[in-house]
Length: 427
Image 1 (cartoon, helix red, strand yellow):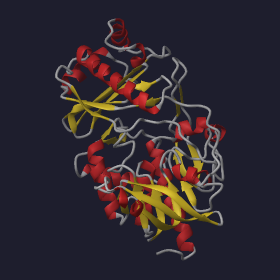
Image 2: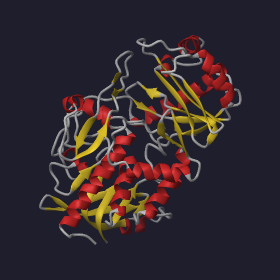
Image 3: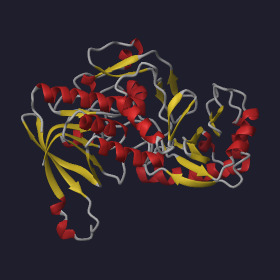
Image 4: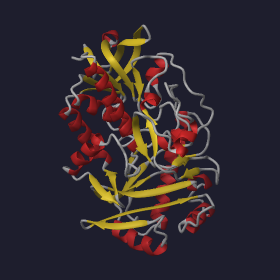
């Protein structure tokens, strides 16, 4: 099997890359280790897609995803942001988009190795899951060699870059992870009516009726630089043992498109430094405490229940490849312009901290990310898209969000298409 483009990772960046490559006529394979596409949007329950300015580029995939979700009631525009998605319906929408673009999708598969020649990847070795995994004798038969002109690593942690022994940027700093969840069975109108009077700060709490359905958002953190209306409730809950002190470090909730009795939680944020397994266990215990807190303190939550816990941790920092250009926070803050920008955004520098009053949320003007920051410095035909881009720690803190990942994936695919067709080298 030979492909023009093989995309590893079916999250925000990988889906945008695969869809765009397919639409541009490239024979494209998308490899996803899980059973559905979407990554943070679906498995991670990371909604909404945050608004990232009015001058974005490479937004055709984002537009197509919005349009597809609208056909099934899985999208709403709220607070001038189109990115309010239903995470379950997004799984179906992404399947449909890949079909429309002619992209072949391989679920339950990962790249196990590569064959290199002259600083290029010639073949990738893919391991597939089968329904009868207990048949050990078939395991070797599941390894498949696939030829590829170009590889896009959208795995989030740059797994292909690691296999290829690429050089990475130093990574001494971390951000805490989150594990999101959804509660259902909520009387949203009752909660909204109470919340509207309880918190009058419309920079924190927003409520809007859209086509007869109430949508809302609110937040609280333990940082003391802002006056939080919800603070007395959280302090009382800690004093009474309903919550642990660390449970209140970050709390943010939103309604969900197409789920009129449900609210999605952008928390808990886990501040302890632990191994992966311990972090997951701690996060789920925190979710249970937070759900009980809501039922005790929030009108409208009397009959609420946990309906979904994310299947993946929300990871904000990962391996970052050394690209042909290392994008810096100075580039971002200065709004430096580039010949081939793949991203134009004004999303702030958003770096979470495990410590009180140490997080960063720094507003900026429009900035540009060059295509060279998505090109491996070591492998000629290896590109990256998503949070593993070639950028320093602080710059990555602004560029890791979904809207920018969409643009990265789409921009890389467009660049590859131009390379392929200019060389008349395609299938």
